[in-house]
Structure formats: structure tokens, C-alpha cells
Image (cartoon, rainbow over all chains, first blue to last red; front, side, top):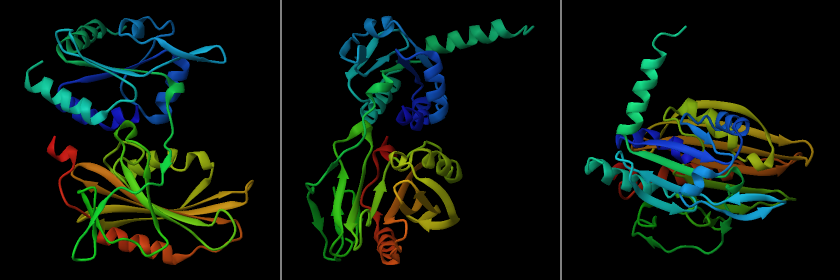
Length: 106
Length: 214
């Protein structure tokens, strides 16, 4: 997430906005965002419904708690999902894709 | 009463609809740390006696005893590499220095970046860092920011002295840093810091960074 914060000026250059979504509760996210000085919105999605709509499913359980895999989704300004990648964010890949979308006017 | 509240909300909704939206779904428990790999990657020796590493970085290799290392994989796009050596004396006597393309933090101003950096630098060692010196320096052909700090762990009876030099590659902040570990009653070896300084002086980019070509 610090990588997204580091790249915010580039996202802005490519007319993009970033949102973080997590199943962690709002208080935890608030503390976490403060500790990393994150300035973009983080959404607490306790039930996981938002992630599920993008195909994020609990991958395993640790001490009874589900662990959700990471996923990066890019939606264009018409609302079409244009990019979905599992795992840790590949920032350079994301930036190249956003640059392409911006050049296409999407 | 905030009479303009509704208007602001409308404006924000409009912005969100017009701009591409980029969503990062994550779990706090899913953040992994970096491991180390011992296997070196190929590099090219130049007639000048320097090496070109990964076809991108040129520098003079430190003396015998310093071993190349780099973080395993390309986790979150971060890139760093460095050298380490075991120093004489009891554990944890060793010196490590590195070049980091994405040092902790995000600010482009050095003083702000320093604060962000120290929130996470050697965080798992739980050292109580004290800043010994801050000063402007010339690095990578431009202005840089040097911070010298010492951290102590009274429980493990260990200490570490670090020097961090922030510089710019294009518009992004990069960093060089060295940390020398010693038992609490051990003496630091200034020759490692000299090696670090010579490495930085010899360091140059062979090509533009990804961000400079974006």
C-alpha cells in the first residue's frame, strides 16, 4: 500500500484514483493508514461482499480466521473492469496499464 | 450547518464517475517480508574496472570480503541490492550496505522522506534510533540528504550505526544506506563507511529508470 502512496502523483497524471478494500475493520484500517501516512481512501468490507464481486475468495484459514488473497482491479471510467491481477501489486505493470488507458481516453 | 455540503458531495461523485477507478483489494495479514537470496546475478566488468549490474547500474565493486546480495523476487516492484561482510568479533558484528530504488516512505522532499523512512527502517530489530547528524550532500549528480543515526537494543545488548543518503533519480527519491552491527561494548569500524562512500561516488546509472521513461 505504501507503493500506491508513492505512485499517487503518477496515478493522478494518468487520471486515475486508487481505493484500498480490506476485510479488516474500520478502526484497524484507520490506525494502519495513519501509521503509513496513507492519504487515499481505504474501505472496510467486513463481510467480504465487495471482494467476492471481483472474485476474491478466502484462500485459507489461520486460527479460524479466513485469509483473503490480494487482488488488483482497474475499472475504466465507463465502469468496465479492464485489469485483474492476483497477488502483490505489480506497480510497474499497473502504471503501464493506466498510461495506456489514459492515452485511449478511458 | 454546512450549506455547501451537498454540492461538495455531488462534485465528488462526478469525479469518481469520470475518472478510471483503481481498486486494490488486500488483507493486512497478507503482507510478506523480504527474504534474501545468495545466488548472484550476472554482471559485466568494464575496462575501467567498474561493473555494470543488471545493465542499469555502474559502480566500483567493494574490496574482497564484501558479498553481493539482493532481495528475493521483485516483491511489490521494489528493487534493491547491496553488499555485506562479516566483521571480526562476536555476533552481531557485520556491515551491510545497499542501494534502494524504493526506500520506505513516499515523499519527494528529503526531510519528509527521512521521517517516513525511519518509521520502518530495521523495524524488526526494534532499535531505539537517535539521529546523530543531518546534512545536505551532493550525490548522483545532484543534491542529496545524509542522515547518520545510531540504534541501541539494551535487551539484546546490541547496537547499530547507520548512514542513509537520500538522492534523486529523476523525480523519485532513492537511497543508499549502510548499517554496521556491533555488540553494545564493541567499536565501530570506520573503514566500512569509507567503502560505502567510495561505492556511492563510483555509482552511476547506465540508462533511464522505468519511471523516467513512463
